[in-house]
Image (cartoon, rainbow, N blue to C red; front, side, top):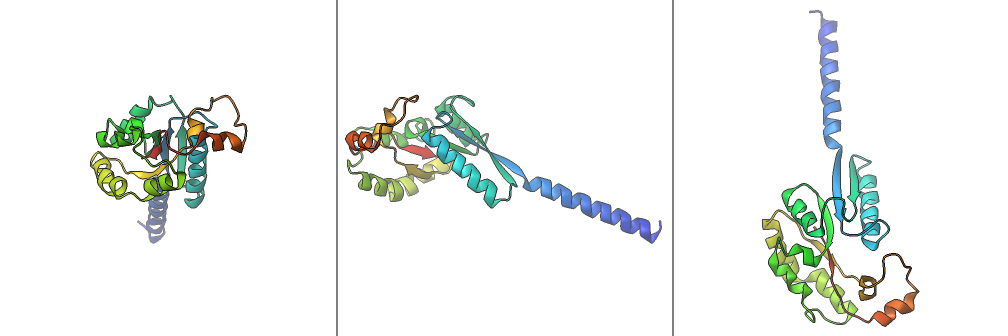
Amino acid sequence: MTTFKKLLKGAVLSASIALASAQALAEEWKFAIEEIPGSIMDSYAQEFKKRIEAKTNGNVTVRIYPLGTLGTPTELVEQVADGVVQFANVSVGNLGTIVPESQLFLLTYTLPSDSAAISKLLGSSKVIYNDLSQDFENKGCSCIPFIPKAPGLDHQPRNSQPRGLRQFQDAGDGLADPAQSL
């Protein structure tokens, strides 16, 4: 074989390997949410998608699956644990099949009534981010910070618009059911 042919074969092989590795870098992450398109959870997911795709120059794309697309919210949590879905944003009640202790947050009056205290607790609790987080990791999930939801939003009909800030001020402090990302 001539030197030129050897160089040509080497160049083709190098280009093939480079293309294969570039394709291996491109991947799709699945993000399932328990709400409909246009909801608050959807806006979080859309922002996450935008930031990930921008930071990775499109090498990672995020596909968002709204409510019902991949199953019930409880099934979404199980799909995260099984590695079928990479991310899910669900209400804490759906985590009980994976880590039963997480249902503590469903008990009435277990959280403070002050919004700032709730945010502080959900953002830095050693119980959540050490103990419970370890329990989630043992089940194949990673616990991402809890997101407090305004109680007024929990009872807002899906097809109506908020009437203004007064609606949320009237709702009072507290937390009906914090959303959780896995």
